[in-house]
Length: 313
Image: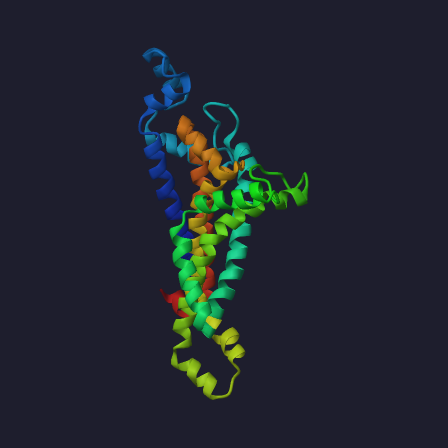
């Protein structure tokens, strides 16, 4: 198991360095354009060149990346080109909002999709047909369309929840819960339908194996067969689905934050990219890559714990 952990950590580190360097090379490819965004379009060429030197963009790309990487390991992601605020403190304010949406969505998706997928695979019939229809519809309808529909239904027609805005749980736990109900519901519509269909397929495949028929022939109850043996064997594919779902949730949360005007990383990175605030963009990329790498690492370790064959591969 220690060897598995070591190999996964090396792969995680390699992915982080490759992705962050590639992103760094892309966003810093045109130093003059970055400097002009900061000083303004009407600025003279001399002013732009002076800003390039001031921001350190005239140095070799590898030197700039090493400097950024050293700051990252020291907890310093630089400062915003436009506000002068430390990127790390900005992320410290925005990231908890995005993380709350992701954790709530992921926990509810796991619980609902496992329940629905297992019921659909075991019972078949109309639950199975309904799930297949919902998986197609949920995957076809964009999350922002669902979000707009929920706003019209539960914030305008029936003013139960706020249409936009966010309240910190430190201020009011009840108002915080009300402010995240509609965003989380908009995310769940697509994620639960897709994940439940994947879980249904994994459970269905295990139910058709010979050892399941043997367990039933020995008189073991259906509940024991499903919960003790089938779910364990379907856990590997299920964890892979959840890993991919978590990565997909990042993109979905960015869109949902825009619709509901939530002060999360989605709004932050969209504004920074449009203005050319490269340190903020790189900070968001670093946090995203670390989060995705952590999810993949945990998924690999859990898969290895459930399936000994995965440790060898």
